[in-house]
Amino acid sequence: MRHDAEDDGWGTLDRARRGRPGESEGGGDDAWEDPCEDPWGPPPSPRTRLEVDHSRAVLTRNRSPDVPFDRSVNLYRGCEHGCIYCYARPTHAYLGLSPGLDFETRLFHKPDAAAQLEAALRKPGYRPAPIAFGTNTDPYQPVERRLGLMRQVLGVLSAFHHPLTITTKSALVDRDLDLLADMAGRRLVAVALSITTLDRDLARRLEPRASPPAARLRTIRRLSEAGVPAMVLVAPVIPGLTDAEVERILESAAGAGARQAGYTLVRLPGEVEGLFREWLEAHAPDRARRVMSLIDAHRTGSGDPGRFHVRMRGAGEQARLLARRFAVARARLGLSDRAPELACDRFAPPPRPGDQLRLL
Image (cartoon, rainbow, N blue to C red; front, top):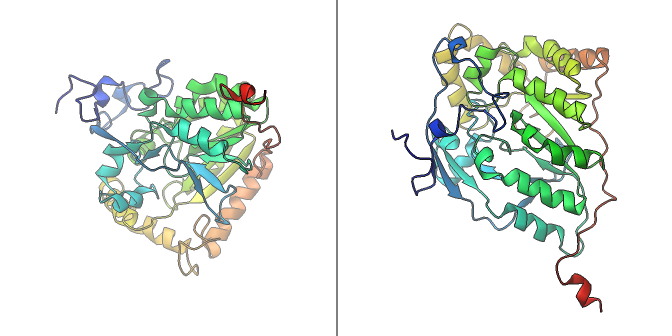
């Protein structure tokens, strides 16, 4: 394995030259600061091959009743964070690649995303509504530090006064705090930090190249102090592995300044179930059978676990108990179950060079 160059001409990125996984350009706030705390050594650092996503449309529409948005943008296919439970992994199979290591190391990006988005927003008849980022893969995964696609897109949305929401597991969102704070002043943005566990060691195993939990809590605090609406998303809740932490995560996030909270139940579509089972056998063999049994119990009576109204929260008595626990804790901490209302009435495409001349 070669560690002497950042780009070898084939779009291959070398993490050894880009700092520790999750490290921000401004310092180590979102890094795994002390490798000595890691009893099994540093996190794995497979090399990333970066390729261009040639799709012509940047805006994706959906009609799912399970999500509070009808349009989204995904700047990347694949995700370096390497979360073993990620429901987006099977999308790599559509490309003829593996949902396992390929999903983490064969990334596709949209270098012209900002230009594509601007063209979409200028189309006659376009009607604004919040655009969701981070619905499939994380817009602030490590490679974003080098490419800056999300910052380019934020510039477009800010110029158009267009609302958006962001969901991320990365403290790298701090990099764009100047833009986010300005947009928040116009009620154009809300940010959700996804936290699965507060256990540092467990997080390293589950989400090897995402920011550590403490860094995500610090990010919630920084966003909140800057006036950016900050939400915590306890996601995913994994029965028998992380579900006991729900209340503690909510308490920590509320203490950091979060004002809204939500959760999702782990779902294991397609190849993800096999990958997750293998992970359990390797990292929690004493609990593997019980965890899978509890996941099944939270889906009891759901029929197809991937169908609408069930896939995010599960079904059956165990799922109802989890929902009740979450609601009680959220109410006790004064956290809202509603995302902040964003402004759509400010939308105004900025004039392009020559636009005024055509009016004469």
